[in-house]
Image (cartoon, rainbow, N blue to C red; front, side, top):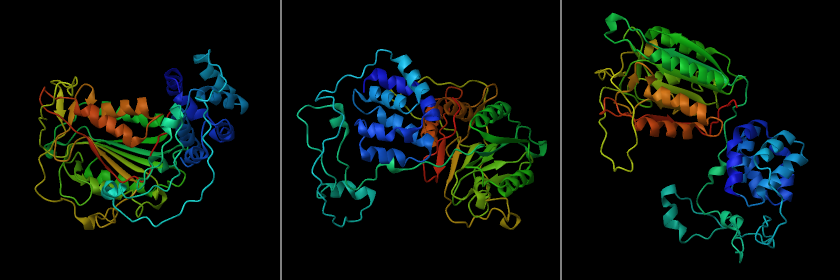
Length: 441
């Protein structure tokens, strides 16, 4: 496909994902040779209508020079005129040229030969390269064409011993509203706690409240909670009926510290100076304590320090260095590392036992690497939240959550506090599928 047509699809991806009905297009795209049957099956397996539409548009960009024009023909033939007119208005000169031998998109039809199925030895992913020389692919190879075309370069035999990324399905995320989002924003701490007030945290809270409302979540904000109150609101969230929703989000904005753990590191402080381990926070919403969230993604975003160490970074080559931000108003959410493993008695916490099996469908995103401080600008909010909110705004319509968190990691890692200190966010990911938010156009 020509770069001009690819850019048109990319600019209109949000509208296509929102409005396109891919099920009406499959027969036409298959008949016209834009996609093979295997490719159609992969698109269908992507999940919801939105996920299928997203996959179809992404795959369409990899097809031949006639694919864009044929796609417009299929849109018009299935009554999706508004999308067709939108795309055609940006490419008014597009014409469906007669296919030449080098432009034919139809796959080569080979005689049907049933493969001999042999047992494949079970090997770990690290062993794949060692066995690859001796293994024989069971997939039929396409006969090479004398005239190379974009299509023939794109279609390759599937390598043995690897699972195609295309086979990973997405979580169902089309409920309206999508789910509950709880934000706990601790700003003003009691004098007895010996913790400083967190100037700039209200900016973070406002940004995240607006962003998750835009992602179709029911957002509830709680401010300046003590340890016991944090437990109470988490318990109340656990007891809600989530059966009509697809996801649940918890955001913690507070001071933090490092505690011993066997699953999720770190803890966040109540305004009374008593902390709650992140491990306990996640346990409130796991499948055992909240059955209506079983199999559904539970997301936790922690803007708090993981400890008291300050990262000065390391030197990189000039071509890797990027402009950084950070000023004199930068503060940390750091508290010295706790000397005890946990100030909470497990007998006082019946809703959060640490002996549960490894969780599934949980992702915990930390503003900083465990053991290090997290920087916050008193005027513009924390580095992590400011970047996270902007990445969600710009990319939620096209990218999955894990991909966006990698973008956040990269951008925050380029910042510098007081011209010296660095920060590196990270995640503990127990999700089983891709997660795409509901993004408004």
